[in-house]
Amino acid sequence: MQDEPTLRVARPTDDIERLLPFYCTGLGLEVLYRFENHDGFDGVMVGRSGAKYHFEFTHAHGHTAGRAPTDDNLLVFYIPQSEVWREAVDRFRTAGFEPVPPFNPYWDRTGVTFEDPDGYRLVLANKGWSA
Image 1 (cartoon, rainbow, N blue to C red):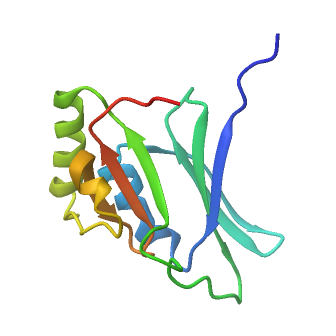
Image 2 (spheres, one colour):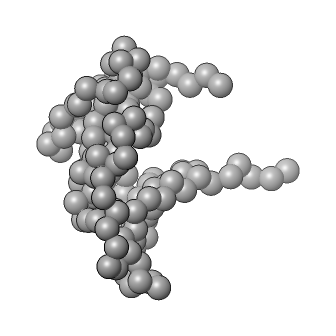
C-alpha cells in the first residue's frame, strides 16, 4: 500500500519576506525550510509539520514574477467547524489582512476571501469537502 502523495504548491514571487505574514501569521503556517542562492533561486517552504501539503515560494535572481494573472487564482481551505473557521478568519484580520470581494460570488456564500501581497487569493470556506 502506498502512502498518500504530498502536495507542494510552488509559485514565484518578487518578495518572499512580504508573503510570510500572510501565510504564517494569517493562515497559521510555519516556515519548514529556507534556502538562498540555490542555482540562482531563493525560497521558503511553509506548512504544518507532518501535513501532506506545503507551499513553496521562490524568487529567481534577476527575474520579475509580477502579480497574480487574475482575481480568480485561488487556494481554498474547507473548514467545516464554525468555531475553527471563525478563528481562522479572525487570525487573518488580527494579522492586518481584510477580506476582499471574490471574483466568483459563490465564495461569499460559503466563506471569506483574502488576497496575499502578490494578488493571489485564498478562500476560507465554512463547509465540508465533498468530492
